[in-house]
Image (tube, rainbow, N blue to C red; front, side):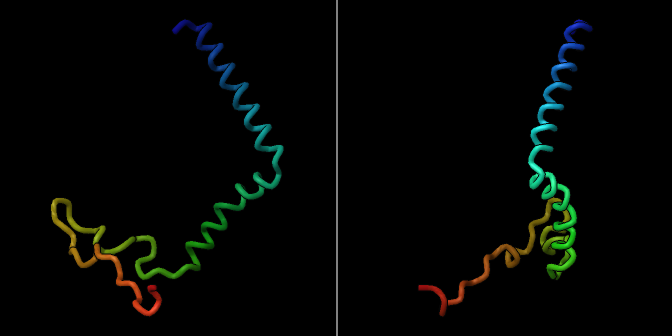
Length: 84
């Protein structure tokens, strides 16, 4: 690619980036939401209890090439009192 074409591509990329940044910045609610989202996700992770935390279920930690215990892969039974 010639240097002139490369410069033109970078200039076009910079123009598009500036335009997108202006559009995003124009919506203050969206900017506020995106700024608070990492903190909200951190609070969610911190306060929602889980037996394994972020480690995931036990069966995900099996050695490669071995099959997990099939009992962990079954879905829980539905409560018959609630089902129609």
